[in-house]
Image 1 (cartoon, rainbow, N blue to C red):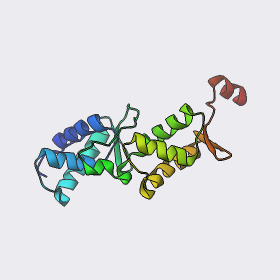
Image 2 (cartoon, rainbow, N blue to C red):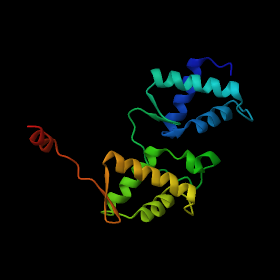
Image 3 (cartoon, rainbow, N blue to C red):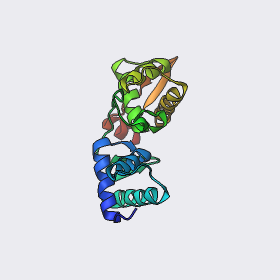
Image 4 (cartoon, rainbow, N blue to C red):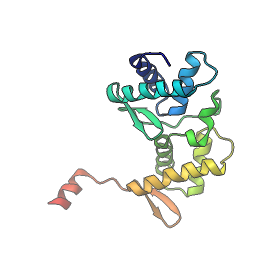
Length: 175
């Protein structure tokens, strides 16, 4: 908690560079472990939050709710089967951006998929042996977000990728 804010921002950035996107709680845990602390009390969490604020303001880190990511990096689906940190295996700690990338890949690679197919396949890709109700819920939230953004559509019971709009089509529609 006595670490200068600039140093803490550098530590936050190092964690995010390795694990982007990552839940804020996991960043706190990594920094706590780096200082060989058993727990992160209110002062330590406040110091990390200040470091996060500085990293977001000056070091190319983006905060999306409870998640941090590199501003210029695309999320990838990571297998957590052998993850030592229990925080990485909590469904609520799975970054929505990572889930959305996984959903889109499954739907496009298979020319469509049902919600259940997406949930089962993505669960396995993430390294989970079973799809719990909580895991299904966060995957369904990612599907709902993609539907809301117009990146996915429903055709009957299938999720399909929305057709990308070509720049020429936009010009024609506008003109």
